[in-house]
Image (tube, helix red, strand yellow):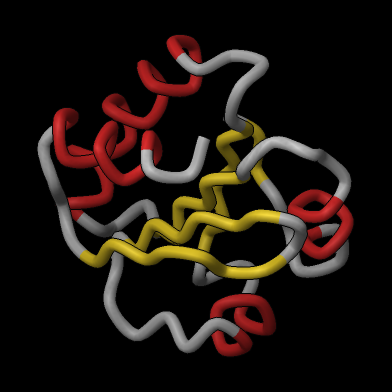
Length: 104
């Protein structure tokens, strides 16, 4: 999964015609560490259909504040640069797949 920063976030989420799943996380966050491998697997499973990226909230406060991320992990789905869905907290792979499948 590609790491996205404040300075390239907008171009990364609007550059593709496919849905973009953004993982807002931090290295010290236990649930984030559990969700990371799930998203990595889905990144491979949905290759070409969905783009997965991650944003470290500690290193990218502008983007995190813009989308009012107050709890992590927060997963947001973007289509055409707009937020279409949000999931907060750790969820099992099946729940994340369900979230993603709604937007393909």
